[in-house]
Length: 433
Image (cartoon, rainbow, N blue to C red; front, top):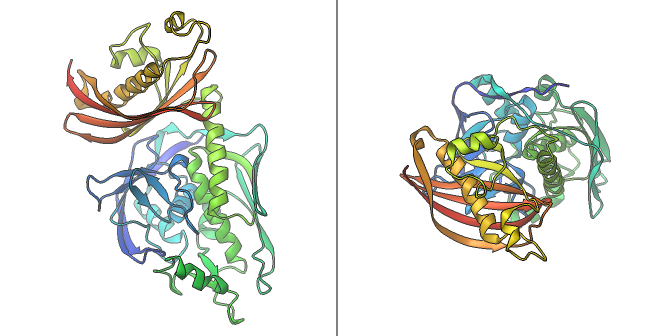
């Protein structure tokens, strides 16, 4: 199966409503975005409008009954239904301006967001979407919950097995193969639900403040069955949630995913495992970058030259928000000749320099920054967590926290084999070259 073109929407659209857990009224505007930008939430109700990217690293831990994304101090709650609509329709790039802490609930399904995206019009883009093709199973198991992603030749299939331990709701299952037209008809309308026995506990945890019969189906109460859109609507909604969570992998997944009693917490564990696999395969060249620079293009932006150019290739560029690069650490590096020759390790200051160089690439891509230099002014919150030795491939990630006037603040992370080895916040000023 060939890679598909990335997609965004043609025109801005907006929706307002109450958050199902917060109970707060929220206005949200969806805008078109550039290829490889992904879905980026912008909390326009907060000072400096902080941004929260929709990807695996942003998943907040311990968010009960929902998927919450967090970046710095900013959070966006209950993103799964909007992301399911994006995943189901193949919409990859959006800027989401949101005036509040939580996505509007709508009717508790993904259908309002599907209708919103379709009303905006869906536009193909020149870049292609990355694919993650598995060579072997990846699984998660936790307290009777299992999730396994099995290799599959084409597309994404989700098989959900539900067992809620309730005598009034028998075990059931549903198998679904992702398809845009079929998603609109058979998955998107499935509404969120809870068991009648859970209501008091959820209220005690401060959840469900915006829940009502219009957006939440209550099962297993006094024996009366509420009007259902599908006989197995609750299982279809579990599939919907998983489709939304899998959007955060950052690539089209070719796999057969089998989920038994899984919720957002265990979905997140699988998503992180899959995202780590994507990173490893990208570093090994098994997922070709659709955007990025080779060393010649890097040198057009940066003044650095051998032996002080410390990034070999830029793998990924997401607008002006994020960049990913690699540095292949060889025993021939000149710094190894005098830095612990008997036990060579890449100096931590050079790991930070590699971050700074990649941040320079990210900041200098803007047209108004052409002809400038990104000068490092300050380094804060430095943590060196592990050794980088000859033969390692250092994966460097930088993310823009703030750009204002000629000042840019960037968060940098270095990884080897998926494990963080260094991190820091970098402050730059842009000056005329």
